[in-house]
Structures are given as structure tokens and as C-alpha cells.
Image 1 (cartoon, rainbow, N blue to C red):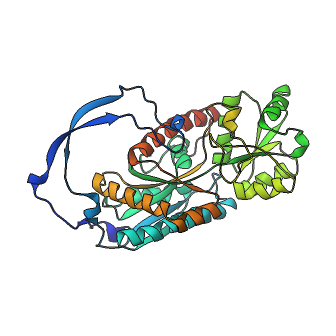
Image 2 (spheres, one colour):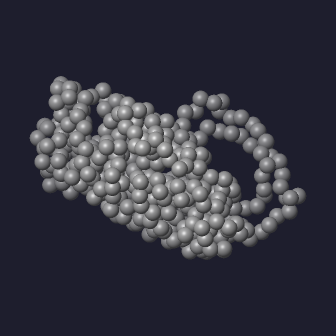
Image 3 (cartoon, one colour):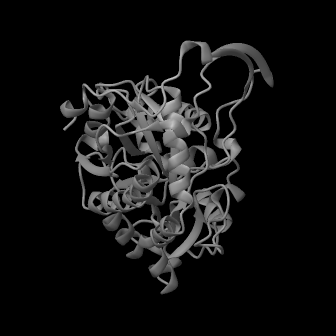
Length: 374
């Protein structure tokens, strides 16, 4: 499929003469994403603004057209464990549903069919690798889970691409928090009480994850480091069996998805201790953020749209604008709400800063666990 795209070049509705291009002074500001929270963005140690010269074109991004062929969005199938597991099907389907909702509206605004292609395998790296080798023309894109993408930079000994350099950010498309759940038998009504119980008996309790190297594993390791607690890791082959172990009180706690834990909490079978976002989530307004007890803790299932590196900036800007338009559509928001997700708002520069920060922060967690995949 990708070979068919290799010789394409973007089609533009208007080709401007070189005389229309001008030098102008712009300011380089530190990128601060509006979502997730600013605390998740890259550090801002540089001066507030620096003037420099850039070469720009007066062509409006709205004048860029994609009339050569359909646009392809690869949904790289990330399994939440190192080896593919039962939860991978659910994870793929949710990402697929969200991507198709965006693709439908982008097709309308771009005037070109936007197709979604699932490319499973190797923790999602096969799909990403294919996109990094595609022509940087805006016709081949990838929708990926940002934390898992960032984790792969340090988790895998070898990758066929550079996580930090071979993709060009377009937009943060969706976000949903993980939910920290425990068994009611732990006698902890909230995270503060749970931390007291765990700190009183270091190493006594265990937590469940969807597998070694999974996001639910490393998210808990991140929490352990930040909260200063000792817990034993019990890996399972998927989030479903991991949460089942918490339901059975075989493990003390675990991270789950909103659909995977909300019904059990309503039935009194689980106690929800916190959401992984730094703020409350609209679908669980009574569950506080973990950050209230562990300052600075902020992560979740963030899904973003990327293009191959060296894709022209005006093409990126057009795709970003149409992605934002798609996310604002009432039908998209309805589908997102039914999937326990919220649309993102980051600019390409803000997303780049966020990815850079995630690569750095997750590398520290991966090094602490000693995990490595050949």
C-alpha cells in the first residue's frame, strides 16, 4: 500500500511565484500545551522570546488541496503488554473508532477520502515504521498512542526509526485517563488512605498490570517512584485479567480503563482511587486526580496524529486545521463521549514539546525497571 504512495507529491490549488515569498521577523516562544496540562509540556528554561528570521510563503493553508489520491491514516495496533494480549483487540477497536470519527469529518473538509488502515504487530512499531518510510507529502499518516510511542524509544534495544526525529506532529487527537482501582477489602476510601496502608507495610502488597513493559505496568512504576511506596508487580496477559485479579482481591490495585472499571465500582466491587489526568475527568467527576495526593502525576491514554518527518509545514498546518475542525464536530464529540475520550487542543509545536518530555520521563522509568526488548 505504501509503495503506491511513494512517488506522489502534494497537489496545490495555487502555485505562487518566488516573488510572493518574503522575509519576516517572528518570535520563538516556549511551547505550552493547553491539553494535557502545561506541567506535562517541555521545560521552559529558555528566554521568553527570541527574534529570528524565517523564510515564509504568503500561501494560505486553505489553498492546499489533496486531489492526487486518498489520504491513509495508519492505526498502529498497540498492545498494552509486550506480547499481544486479549486487551489488544479492545485497545485497537477504541483507537480505530476514534480515528474513523475524525477521518470521516476530515474527508468532508478536505474534499478527499481519508481511509483508516490497521497495521498490528510489535507493540505498534510496525505501523509506525511503515509511515516513517512513506513519502512526506501528507497522504500517509499515523494515529498512535503517545505514551507507548515515547516508551518504545527506551524499551526497545533496536527500532527501524528514530522516535524523536522520524515523525512530524500534527495534532493531539484524543485523551482518556487511566483509573486506579482497588478492592473494597483494602478499607481505603481514597488514595490518601490507601497510601497510608501501603506505607505501613512496605512490600506486602502487589499490583496487577497488563504485562511487562505495558503502559499499566510503567504507569504504576512511575507512581511508585513519585509516591515513595513499595509494591510487588504481578503481570497478566491483558488489562481484563489484571482487573479481575483486583476484583478477586488477589492483588491490591491496578490501572484500568473507564469502561473496564466503572461498572464494577457502581456495583461496589471496586473502589476508584484516582484518575491519571492532573484534573478531574468529565465522565468520572467524583473521582479525584491522583495528582491531588501525588503532585505532578499526569498521564493517560493520549492519541495523536503524525506525518513522516520532513512533511512541509504548510501541509502540516492544513492537516492540523482540518483535524481540529473534525474534533469540534458534534458527531465526533458524541462518538468520543461514548468511548470515554475527550478531544485534544495542542498545536503541532505543543505536541512536539509534549512528546519530547514524554520520551525523557518514560526513559527514566524504563531504566529504573531494567526492562529491555531486543
